[in-house]
Length: 571
Picture 1 (cartoon, rainbow, N blue to C red):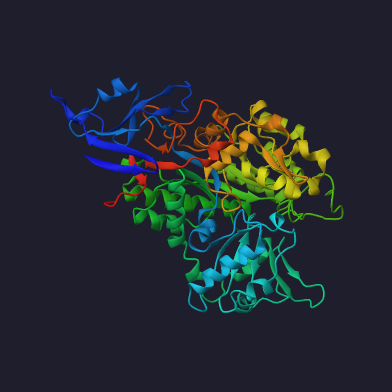
Picture 2: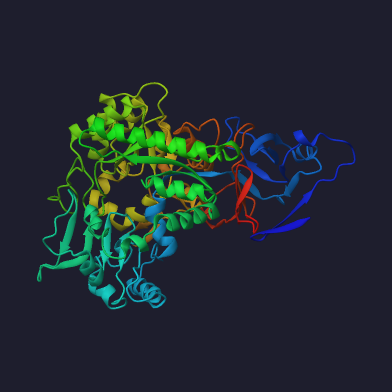
């Protein structure tokens, strides 16, 4: 017998002793009893036990009937009455891009700029001179609304190059040493849509780099070692497992890093990867991506891990971007910005290029996911999907973020069969901070319309867009239940008609994500025949689940019946 400590929950795991003969070849490897199991199965079943064999769920039901299945070598977990949910699926992550938060500094949800600098100072003091400091997730809108400067970082880390992404991932903040090492000046060319912010008096870079301008740091001395994608990815996956995540729709784009983690046996998540198609023409770009998909499939198959763990890695879709974000006035809007009417968002690709890429992707059996935040950007993407419908058998196309959308376009989502991939914390963190300023109160009813999507039979996939908002799915789901933000200095609910129920929220974080993949029949719910991905929480969820959901912790996470958090010492 061994005892595992799952937060405040003490769970006893032991071998079930049988007095009679039993065919152990057909008995479960693992059973969980005395649990509050939210299966997310289409039947709507709530059970208190299940069995796992060969990495898959083999039975669900009552504790007595499941316990009776145990054999001499069956491992039994008595959950002590706490809630168990399916392994969670994040519908939109940037695991490598966000890994800096796991190995660098994390400034998310911190309002005080002095605290930002204290954290950076402490990190600098822990590193040798010249070592890069990465991470970030800073949000100047939580503070005084004024963008930080390179001089602020210079004051606390003069001998370490610093590059910190903001919470949206669309701006970067650098110190003077980082700018010097990268060889950047006011006249450095930047990719389309990018911008180097310049001081109005000196004409020098302020330390803020918008959109693609942040890519100017990629080849700076020491940057590649500091941002080692394999080490960062392993740290990000460990963090994700600790939060109950067993799968993610990821946008990192570095497939070799994922393969390296797979080869090391540390890919303890199922990754449905978005590929960025780059080439002289859409057809050439998609042909290259198709070849890469075949290479990944061959590598994964050669690993032999899928036989016992299920699907682990696939290039599942083409990822594109049409616009930026509301905070920096780079999201494409149908009407002028309320607080800056002369702002003109520049599309990242033309209407024609977008439509051509969608058509080429569909011809190669790829679904497409397009970042579109402004209502005009959303309309452009819907136009492209309407012009080139996907063939049967291709997973569903989707639009990412959809922070503002008009009612007529919500209808088009339904008519065209397009999924909405949305991130709840983007609403609760930002509506009162800057969204109302950007779009005005008259258009606020068009913002973050989760309920409208479901009411119009639009598949709703929930995720974090980590590192732009918390990776913790329990925080994201809780946000859909309370829909609160700071308005006029007071934290309160807004547009409550767009709130979700817990059942809708957890579906959006489990089966809805599975349904966007070719793995829909294999993961997403606690259902007989599916891979045994599940999460044991630290307490039993109440009958009326409210925002306190965000305070719950994960006691243990299992992938294909294997405990991946906390990691066992013999793993």
